[in-house]
Image (cartoon, rainbow, N blue to C red; front, side, top):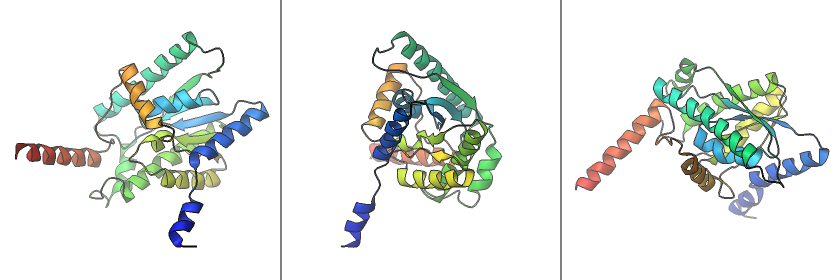
Length: 236
């Protein structure tokens, strides 16, 4: 077998793995508790729509990478408003054949210095590189800590819904932390089954603010450089 063929065979289907977990837990009869790390309200929209029928979810907003402070405040407020509005909607428009469980919210500390210490020496790393991978672990580690503290059955993150995020790397980090903290990680690739497309639709439906950069000052600077190149090209 060629190496390329072997890699293709060994590649995991995280969506199917998650569906299997859901199916198994449903047969057990007890609704499991899930700590869901959310990077932003738009990304959480589809994930909450999908999972709130199977889990009792507590959303953790822990994103010390966000820059500037007013952007952080805007995003966390958007997250809280979406949860409130979504919860009201599923209560008033409840489908007879589907159960939704209440969603709780907890805001982590905005310890931005922890992020900058982690990113030291990686300031010029392109988006999606080592700095981002370490940022994933920073946030997932805090999610694991909260999950243990709150006696959750699982923890996971909305990050895999983004087409720009590496689901394999996220799940690798999540499973490693799960072993370290003694709690189960819910593997996911929420962009599957048109998850990202649905999140865009829900963002429009709820009139949500969608940022045009990932969140940190480095991604903001890279986005500004991209805009400048585009504007320069349009002027030629």
